[in-house]
Image (cartoon, rainbow, N blue to C red):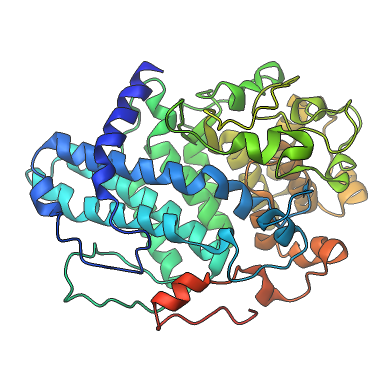
Length: 454
């Protein structure tokens, strides 16, 4: 953890880049001049680490709220956002409808993208690496924004003067996705192949840029491009699947060979994993009956994911280790794994299945199944059990990547959200797949229009 703590100390130094509580409530910052701050390479590096600091805050809770809360694998006894999402009763005052932290991350990225190049001579590799990280983190933020709200304001320049427009209209989500691709392609070309050690998982590398591109391409149904991007990840020597005996350590220890990008936390920079999952009846979420009944017999992951012996509600101990029994509600210092190799392999399998390349799809699917102690599937097996190969892959993702923040987006991306969730909470309208805009954003920006369903 030594290198990581050095990174955290620089992140704390970079806290000056917090520009406002809401980037769309843009009061001029009279006491801060970004051009005056960015003078040395250390300043440039601190500015980029400040973006990672914003990422920590953004996804501490929301990786689960946005990626799991509306899906079928979780259940809850809690009021507030967990219950509203479970009942599909989203409204404009709920916490998860706020995009403040995402736009704070975007704001910090925009400052770095504009000012880092001025610190260095033209064509400097270190400058390009830093800008690549900033653009990748901006892309990550916008990717969540369009998946959660659909059309959102796209801001690509830092706000530095009252002469700039205060109010920003929504941009079509496809235009934003084009920008996301451009940012990630720049990062894939210019970021470092490796930093060495733990930093290869904590900082954006070429491999993590290609992994994020794979996710974006799959969201846009660009299957050939997804296969190409995934192959660059799978051919990268930094990444390899761990054995089932070390599967829990991906999350409980972090920095595994399977991890591609994780958000780092420690005793100072903490997250909400305990409150989300670890407290049984007192946590936001526990495994739903639907999820518990979806395991195939003999799956070695089951009792690594949740407490199979307890009465419902059962603890999710995937992120803390099998047998975890600490019911303290203290914040967690465990990293949050945002992208890992199994995710990319299963996305590549899905892309192959969409392209009619069944053997390639089954080959990747069966690697993940074999690790879990399950028999390999043939095409006939997949059809008889799950309907088709693509559905078998989607099911495998629901188990392998459970509670990691992928399930809701998988259901929306594959057109299965209404089919799966309608019997659970009545979801029936495609316009209801996005969140409402929070009332604070609407009140502060008269150019914003509430999403149609709400």
